[in-house]
Image 1 (cartoon, rainbow, N blue to C red):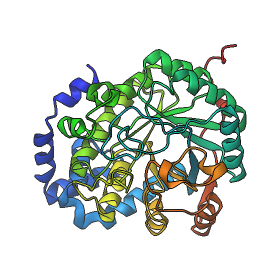
Image 2 (tube, rainbow, N blue to C red):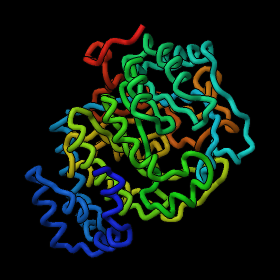
Image 3 (cartoon, helix red, strand yellow):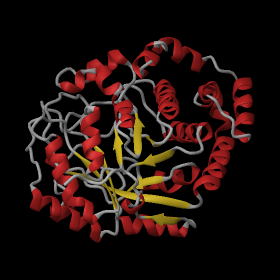
Image 4 (cartoon, rainbow, N blue to C red):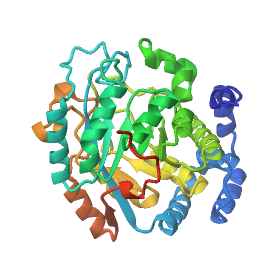
Length: 379
């Protein structure tokens, strides 16, 4: 059974109603199971429900303790590197959307290496490579970028368009460590509303992409929804359902979950549903109590003040010094080329100083290539 079939067996409205119907008793039972490290999806449903809001402090304490037990007082820092803002999709919430009249740019090999040098000067050894979704920037370009960057970074992740299994295999063979595929929203009708044109309009193709990543043997698979497009509690449940299904099938892979909230961009779409800071804290805690192994990411979409407090409750990785335009590190930020606005503008060194003051050790890389047992890179 594919995850698309699992998804179809959980109607959105029924799932949303089941979350709203959770009681204080359900929450207390879920917290007891969380203390024993035995949370299930039904417990997660209770922990993201409105009924759990009065217990947020308890959830935060349990989440912090479980995170420290598994990961210690450490925090991975990574830098997102945008290689291209070419895009053939129409997405209502994204600055790269094909309908936006913005300059388009794809970095050439010299520019890619220049960007790598600028990122390495910041001390970061883990780069997340991003592009828009365009046939002009495909697998051959990704392979070229990986070959150029592999000698300069301990770990390389990518967030690009969904691909075929054999294409993911090829990227893995050229040094790729992780793929992030955000579903944006698990509500099929809302998805179609926000993705009216382009390959990204195919809901099922994107929904089953993480499974294809797992079939390709990629080391880590990243999931997430864009909060603001639909009810955040229901989005969290479907993300957790997706995570649970993938972990059972691709048990050799690692997994991460990210929590992006809708930010200002070229199209200036306003959130349909607001996710408050307390809501985001509740979501992070619920995921940690459900799964002690999953890595939880918090990006520079969030303010410095929020990140300085929230990282302690369950987060294991943070972006720092982010630029969301091609060549942003080597040439500086350019608003007309950005995918979205940044809230936390501190450098990696400044974020690391904050972490150190809180008693946390900064981890500058996600995965060392020398540990990789994958097949040798083809000649």
